[in-house]
Length: 335
Image 1 (cartoon, rainbow, N blue to C red):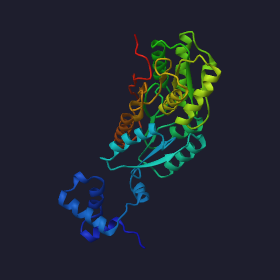
Image 2 (cartoon, helix red, strand yellow):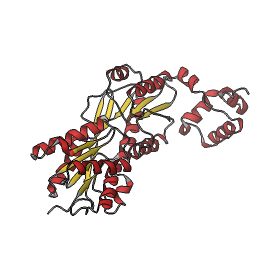
Image 3 (tube, rainbow, N blue to C red):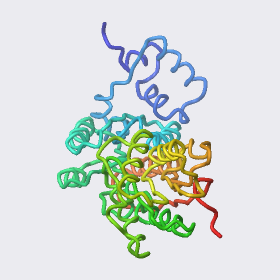
Image 4 (cartoon, one colour):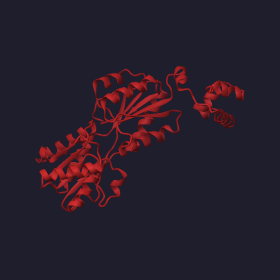
């Protein structure tokens, strides 16, 4: 079958190909009557835009490449929802790629994006390898990174301080009267490293830091992993009375395991998670956690990228986003 072109659609309607292109890319600049005629003709003829041709005719192919370490992770799904909400009203479209927390995969996916002349790229994770930094330094399109805000990045970046957010969570546990506060974490990433640093900082300030209080495993974060890590930590530190979990999946597992072991939460044991996923408010008791504005991060990242594309170039910009400790039933009320 021969591919239907933009010129074919234009010829069938008796208008110019520029008019058809404008109706598809900038519909507000075409009358509603003509726009409806064009859209009906496009549908009838089965026209599909040729992104390669578009990239040759303009600076980019109209695609925003979004690279995430885990497409199925609820935390990143919230960010992607924000990106999609903002992009929906633009003439740009989204292409996702998954790095699986693998630095080689991240580098190859970025190369693939760039080979297609994208309008821009949104990174929701960065392994911070020098070759990736060098690659991003020379890209012709805008790049927005949703990262730990304390990192030095290329182009536009926004995010929270994961070290300060975790420090706030650990301080809360200490203020609630818990003293032997541990931490559990799964697969290591830059975000989890920063959260670990915040935990160490506060525990050292309180004079209670002990490496034995930390239990980690290089596995995918899950509820099951939270159960297992708590069991392992309690075997080593039986007087443990609270735990900071690097994410809510682990925290829910800890809550389940406490129920299984007959440990009262929050009377005898405190639990604090991270991210404020939907289930955190629905568990019993509800999970105390750090609220990260995931949807707002995605929406704002897309907004900044769309502006950069419209302005025809790259620019440097750093934007701090707020976080908030949400206290629920898994920690004692501060007296």
